[in-house]
Length: 98
Image (cartoon, rainbow, N blue to C red):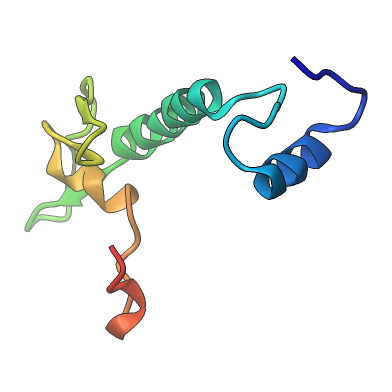
C-alpha cells in the first residue's frame, strides 16, 4: 500500500486519474457510510424542528421521533415531511436526472 505525505486532495486527484485500485487514506467504502451518518444527523435536526400550523395558528411539532432511513431508496420511511430535506425540487428540466 502506497503511503505518502501528500494531502488528501492530492490523493483524491491521483485516484481519479488512476482509477480503480488507487490508494487514498480515506477510502470511499468508509467515507460513504460516514457521510450518510452525518447527513442523517442533519435530517434529524431539521425534522425535530419541523412543525405545521393548525387553523388557529398553533404550532404542532410532529418530527420528535426516531427516523427510519431506507438507504437504498434514499428516503425516510416513517416521517414523510422529513423527505423534503433529502433532495431538492428543481424547476423545469433541471431535476430530470434524478
